[in-house]
Length: 182
Image (tube, rainbow, N blue to C red; front, side, top):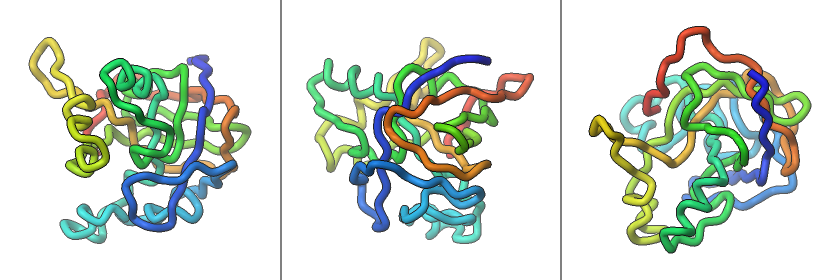
């Protein structure tokens, strides 16, 4: 595939807070995640998931959101900026939610991430802006729940990522597998 998109913003936070401050650049570390981010690690770092299974593999090393979501939310009266939903990388020009499980994205010159699944929106979203969680969920024609709050990935090649960097799909599994919730 040759889809090309762009990184709009990058963010990281060493503490477990809902929103992440924007940075000029972030460094992705193979097998771990975003350097200096609270979710860096081989095992799960999300506090609610640590309580359930602290030794589980961290499939949520990097959180990516499509900037088009912010446009959609603005049309519904919500003002959301990059990093405010806790994402590390905001991109424009690629259908993140339509990617298959296992798709590999190139972020900038060297960094590569493998998409592991969908982010499941949580109640913290409504604490940020009342009613926002409902705006991040939808129902498909068949009645299934559509989660729109981005995708999660693991780092498969280290590298620095900055706003303005290209985003490319570099590989995808031959058989399409819809993204699970991770």
